[in-house]
Length: 327
Image 1 (cartoon, rainbow, N blue to C red):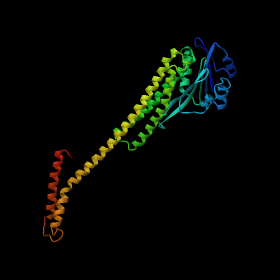
Image 2 (cartoon, rainbow, N blue to C red):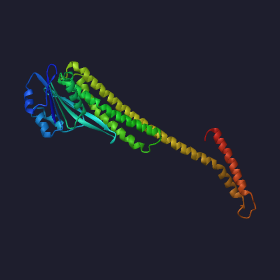
Image 3 (cartoon, rainbow, N blue to C red):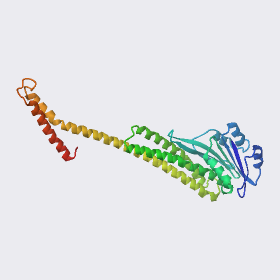
Image 4 (cartoon, rainbow, N blue to C red):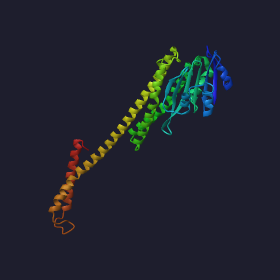
């Protein structure tokens, strides 16, 4: 689907929308307007018809649009800036991050966006235009900022889902209710690393825009792009915090496991200690009592004597362990 919006160049007032491609060719030559063309969910041939046939963008930029990549980038051409950036979402059901590529061409009088899947940031920007076009469409760099701002806002639900899953994992560890905790930690650490790999190149892209490297972004808009860069720094910091949290969860799990092993060893050690009297006495009398009560009854109370002495010594040893706090 191709959506187009034509604005007045001075005030950003919405003049027309969803015009035909033939009329779009005419609008390109009109110096009194600016416009936004959003190309989404179309075939490669349809995309080339617009990107190459109408706007004559560089073949390498068009190739980057049609061949999805996980790495963000920004490049400057003769009269426009080309940028690749990614929106994300996190599915708690699948437990994985998904990325959606957004390709942006920023010119002096136009903004062209291309994406293969529906994007919330694009729909949110269109809704904003319908409500108050002059607030967001006075220039392409301002309209680009609005799209990118909504795109980064879309990270928050994904981060909240990931944070919630890490909190649930931590609760499982504290409640001793999870056996397969290692696989969950490994999966989440993989997703956090994926998030970090998505955000890191986008920080470089946004930093270049925010520092005024490209003249297509006007000076008074640089603070807004610096704000976008700050949002990416915050997201990157959260990714680092999530990674540290998962490391702490894993360490807690290992500590609890070691505590359980120590408890088991303690119980076995106490049982072994309490068995010392019976081992010692039966070993001694087993070698020195010639006859047992079941045989010729030469020592009628041998069983009682052995078990009684063992019981007394075991109780004394148990009391000693209790008094020392070892049991």
